[in-house]
Image (cartoon, rainbow, N blue to C red; front, side, top):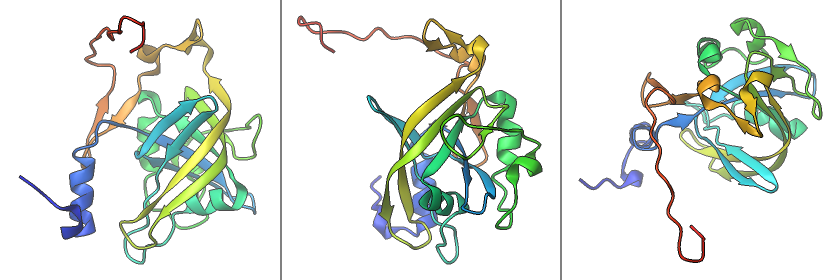
Length: 209
């Protein structure tokens, strides 16, 4: 089977992509506009980039229809700040509530019953119920079109990490307590630590992997 993505309608290409790249961690992004209105939305095109400096990225797609930008992207363009709240099982239901296409200006914190907590270094609030929160300042946005199906890559520098005390052990996060959730295709999610296994990474004679 061979499929050329540019021969497909964007929705069909999207289904092929999300059915291939999985499971995907979820960036639950809180942002704020210049007027102080808060937005909270989940994105599953999300990953880390590097540790020094600590960089992360997520990719909001354009809205179906006219290809308008999503509120999260508009807010980050305005204020250059955002928080990525990591999604574990304890907040997966309210996270899903925030995926609803609410009207512009809606406070998703209130709609989902989540609690705003002040950030240490930036203005947008964090989600108190999230076990790990990454305060970020914008590094750059890379655009890939302005039509439906297109998207943007938002790259941020992490300036503060918040971890719930009981999850932090010897400089590491206890993933079994975090209970991270991954996004699959369609309406499906996965519990990332339900069935895990370990593989020892081999090294060369020089000790490098």
